[in-house]
Image 1: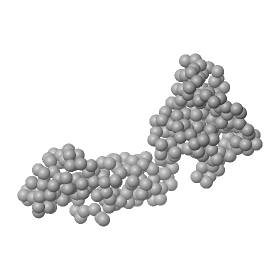
Image 2: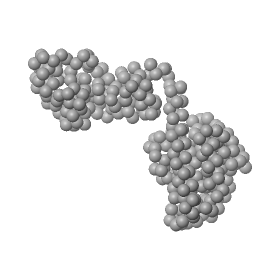
Image 3: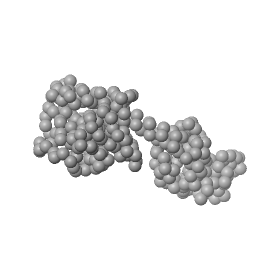
Image 4: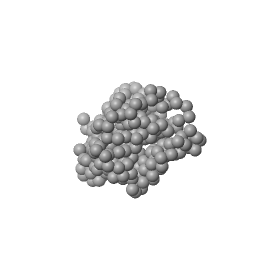
Length: 302
């Protein structure tokens, strides 16, 4: 089963002898108690810690947060040092395969080390459910225990999504400048890099030190998406180039120059936007029947 509760004392307390048989190979055990997070870098699982009692501090982005009973925090074995235990500090850890949470690796990394208060909202629901699950681990051999564990995984998925939404809100509050100031800068960046085939929401977000989720939200407020904006601007400049050219240029050359993956993809996208193929537009435009594109005037800044 994908869920494993783990009791953990302060890191300096000697470990108990562990069962050499991997938990996944022990039939019938839906929930397996362990002595703590493994010393090795376990890249297949993520751990959710529930604070039980004593002094436990989470260090996240240079900020230190003292946990209270029932507070939660996602962590992994490679960053166990971000949890600082006092003499009497104690937590319960639940081990979950990363792929069960339904998010990408970068999104999961965003929530690692983020403290969640266990006395309110979804944090309280998750904390109460997992605490009860840890106290009834003997039912793990039953169908009910299996269902409880699956419910817990679903709750953890919801918690991760809540944390990602909160992170987006924080970025919106902390970003330098308002949305109205940020969007023109992003639009200008896109214009400058339209010919770059690697232009993507990820590269745009990285260049502006924001998350892809926040970038998408900015464009959603503008009633568009990042990909739609990029595609529309590329098509406008393709149309302008085809209409101004005094000589026949190949569709492959135009498609390549403006970052389309292939001539066929360019042709389908162009026809979907303008109701005719690129070659039909070129013939019409160069015969002085059709006007040039009104939206793309001076070309992208280089």
